[in-house]
Image 1 (cartoon, one colour):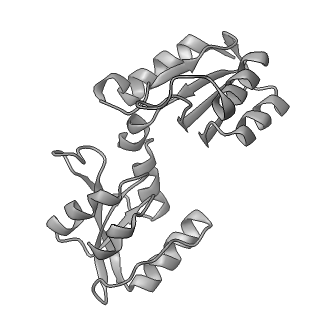
Image 2: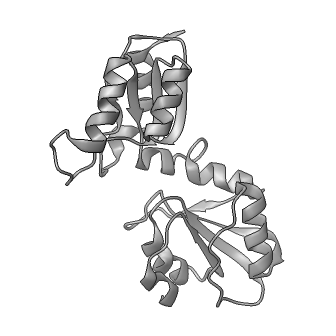
Length: 207
């Protein structure tokens, strides 16, 4: 059992939320019950996750993708209205961390992906647009592109989109979770053999 504000304060401090110029508000996005016995986590504040939270009688949800983004229509209609209505009617708070959760060197998405790949040592780019968000490392042993794709599939329980064209053997890889396809230029600058991103654009395949 914990208080909602204490959970938010802890996460804000752990993830250094105030240090990021983000596309969304990080931290508490929707206030709910102050006493939190059950906290449900997920990637996105989707309708399915909210319905699961209601079923589990959760007091709060912690996600990577919340419900409020810069540049979006501020009117509460349609999908956003229905999701917020369900949360409010059931007293469920919504906590969200976007870039802070990608960047944290221990509990962040990039760091946890490294552990899934069996990489205990990695470096983090410390400058430019990709500062603190671009991770890279040398594999314990060289792999072909197909072997690396299979390792990713085993680690994440889903097949990746594998765009071939790199060297026959991959020794150095870079990665950034989320919509980071543009960071492929940084991967090339660093001389990496492969780059892993949460999303891809058409032009990425011709970079």
